[in-house]
Length: 142
Image (cartoon, rainbow, N blue to C red):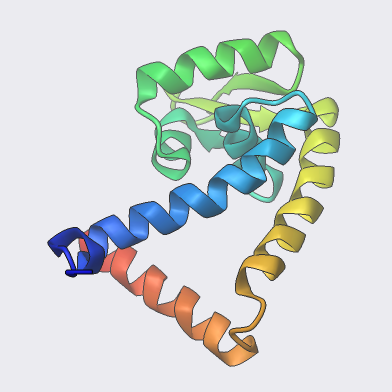
């Protein structure tokens, strides 16, 4: 079989790997009653509570208007709360609530287990190196 351009194109390979690996874990997310954007918000807030909407949009890979709708749903579920920034009242900070923390805690354990399966066979040093190179690529393209 002839190798196509796309078969060796970095951006395609990154997207395909992410899509396939994420699809498996996203099934776990749906099983606990969350949507993927909600999971990303909870995961981001779990150890980084009080992020701005802009920071959350950057981390979760969603546009701010889309994320705002997600945050509205999450606030109605009492998974998060909005609070004005103490120094800049125009800035809104998002905080995780106990119900959201409980959902996230269980999924974080499952996420790490899923990651271990994805990296199985690479060895610890190769897994560390892969993450290091991906972070470097992200930083260079930021």
